[in-house]
Figure 1: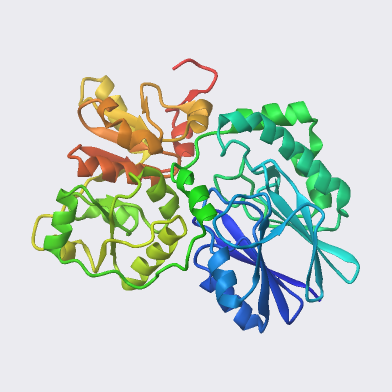
Figure 2: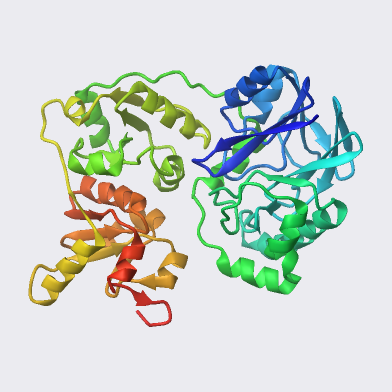
Length: 459
């Protein structure tokens, strides 16, 4: 009996897989913190002998090389990928025996030029296919991460790759993608948690639409992706080593203040409600309750030292683990407790939180001669195109640090679709001395209150 065990990385929207026959195991697309993989293998009582990479990843730093070295496993990477380390090169059509499992290599370009999928067979039965960033649940991997010169070639290759998998594999084959669970490597997001080739034939646009329709639809739906992606491919080609997850040094209030004044990032890991109520002046807020590392990695000037503030050492360790996944290997320092401990007797900073109902009231008063203010929409372009609040200023969250000068003077009410990104931007503006109100509410409520203008109306 073959068992496939997914290992979730929800902060990045990815999965790693451990497949075994009861004694021998293979791993597909391990994250940097591969101790989760070895712990799972140990619990299952199996030995890892092979580590497979579907592609040179763009959204995280791989743990594949370090895992293979630690376990003595073969490290299987496309032979055509230019890398700086020794590996077992594989190509389309190769077959690898792993215990009772037989793995066939299938070249599925689209997400990258050298992308591979791995079809797993045992006892003459086709059981699963690990599709990486090729065929996802209801979608495919995005084809634009290598730059605009490659996009047209890759998007068409992606369509052909999906059709190849659908043609060569039985409908009963379980599909196990790496991306598609919130990852920006996915062309579109889906809510699926499991699927088969047969199910994808019925629901995946790559398999239900003709090539031109698929290409047009996919390219029209692409939006921005995290800036840190630019650093992932080179890191993975060099061959990342084992991460250091030991605790960083503890900073006292004086050191925290020095780091803030030096322009470093001191990041409060508490949720946005607690942060707004009181925080160390000048600190930023990326709560562990949301896509912490995605937005931290997206907004931070790469290489800026990061100090972590958590209520507990466990909170700091969780954040540190997420950071090593994108190559921020060591926090500069840490502190635990609460803002009173971190401020060293200095006054705490705070700002207001509000709902869209509060915003409506404020807008009504402003139209009657009351206080004027700015409404800042930090959603992505696609979200803005669907509906927006008339008169609001639109700067997507990832562009805010470079466009601060475009935000008009005065009080700023910040909103997104649910509150997390608004909290990130409110903290950023507060740290720079702006008077902010963070709207912590669902944008659906803005629609219900009549605050929105439909997409088909001009701004």
